[in-house]
Each structure stands twice: as C-alpha cells, then as structure tokens.
Image (cartoon, rainbow, N blue to C red):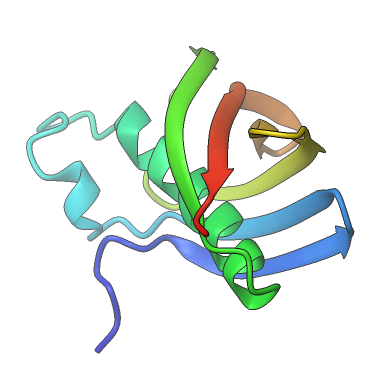
Length: 123
C-alpha cells in the first residue's frame, strides 16, 4: 500500500555526504486538505516531512537508522502549489555525537525552503 502522505519520487545518494531527491506535488494530495480552499498551498510541515523521508531512506539503506530530533534555521521562502515538481538537496556533516543535515528544497531553481535537521544514530 502506497503512503498517501509521501511525495517522494526519487532519492539517491550522490556521494557519502550528499543526497538528492525529487518530489511531485499532486493536486489531490491530502496535504492540501483545508490548506487553503480556493488557493491551495503545500504546508511547511509537508516540506519538512519530505526532507526527513529522504534522509531516513538513504541512511536506512546504509544500515544507519537515525532519530531525527531537531530543526534549526528553517525558512519558507515561496509557496508550493499543486502540480509543482521539487528537487531536494541535502548535505550531511557527521560529528561525534550528532549528524547535521543542511537542506534546500527548490522549485525550478528557486529555493522554497531551507534549514537544518539534527539526528543521532540509533544504536
């Protein structure tokens, strides 16, 4: 059964510290329910969910389950509309305790959101 909340179309690790993902934003996505009638805009939490899914998918494939625990400096610069295609670029900084993932979500080369997610490896 496909997850109706997932927007990811493709996720790949370009090297050990970089992830790229693509997402299609269908007009019938449940994310638009009530947000906003007559003027649908993808909620910011959907963008955060998209980034989280991409990170978790790549790290799980490497055998590194993570606990994503905080967000830092998150910005939402432009609205995302039904039918948009998004690209996600993520780079990881691996420390002794935490992993820090910097991300940018783009629509046609314009940044719609950016920020950082911090995570700990699950032992």
